[in-house]
Amino acid sequence: MKNTITQKHKTGNSLLPEDLKTYYENILASIQDGVIVVSNECIIITFNPAIEEMSGISSSYARGRSLQSVFSDEPRLIELTIKTISTGTVYSDSDFQIFRRGDKKVFPVSLIISPLSDERGDMKGAILVVRDMTRAKELEESLRKADRFASLGLLAAGMAHEIKNPLGGLRGAAQLLNEEIKNERYREYTQVIIKEADRVNSIVEDLFTLSNPRPPELRVINIHEILESILLLEKKALRKSNIEVVQIYDPSLPAVMVDEGQITQVFLNIIKNAVESMSAGGELTIITRIFYDYIIIKDGGKSQSKMVLVEVKDTGEGFQEDIINHLFTPFFSTKSKGIGLGLAISHKIVEEHGGMIKVLNRTNGKGATLQVFLPIASKWKA
Image 1 (cartoon, rainbow, N blue to C red):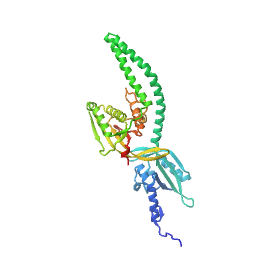
Image 2 (image 1 turned 120 degrees about the vertical axis):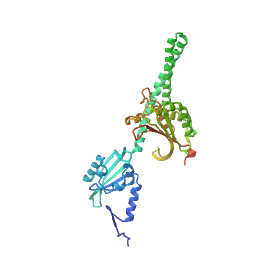
Image 3 (image 1 turned 90 degrees about the horizontal axis):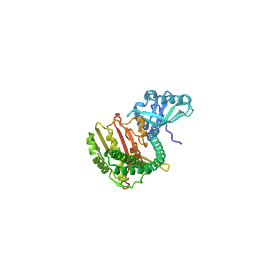
Image 4 (image 1 turned 30 degrees about the vertical axis):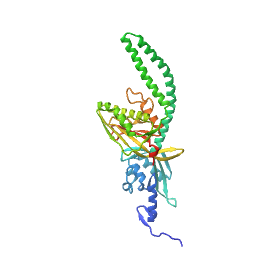
């Protein structure tokens, strides 16, 4: 004789044996995608932890309320859900956006809305599956940047080669004239030519670095020592600009595997930019910590890895949202006299180390944060 479960408990909109109900709840709680189940009347029945985190809305608040009241600022979501229930059609959008209540930011998701029917085929509601696409979009943008760098690198290499030779001749001729001319007034002009030729040569050298960077000579380094040496170099500029430095270092931070000279160049450029953004004074905050959720994609698979994260925060004006994605593009600069190669070269160096740079505006609309992710030295890796 078969064992059957005869006792059922009615809970909300479900008629499941208690142990089976718990089993299904555990499955929904373990799924990384957000899951919302609504009735024919668009009343929310299920609201799993993943969608709680994405939306900033608690399950206890959402369950039992209408989709329209909970997602009142998502009219497209409501419209597609109602269409699914009325027509039985599956709707899919890989380029959707969700508004998160906590930090009031919009972030990218993929959305699939499927009809929910019983064993007889009668419509009972709809299932919404929401996948956070933030990481995928970041990877996509990283690949786009890599393509831009590849083509710009070829252009930069060609330009640098064509400029360097005649520039050397121009500077040499100016030096000879400077030695021959006795009139101090005219010598001032030749000195200007030499000075400007040196400035152009510096730009050409940056182009060479961008197009054909020297392979990093990796060794185990304490990132705090690099940061301290840069702050010592910038001490005079910081004092002159009336900038207070706040250092929040993790004393247990593991060493990194980097090229000391190249990474010093990266942080020197970032800190100088931060100082220049606070012409009227302000606060420069440097934070170091371990970042546990860094995703490495290799050979078609992905894995999580620990990285050292250095955050440089300023209290300047920040960036306009529409220019953030262009900050690492060569020759793009927000400064009136900027060339636009500093951050582009820094981005290239960090990528060569297997790391990443991100730019964030501060939530209060003032200041910006640059995040630099660097690989931990292998003997410290868990």
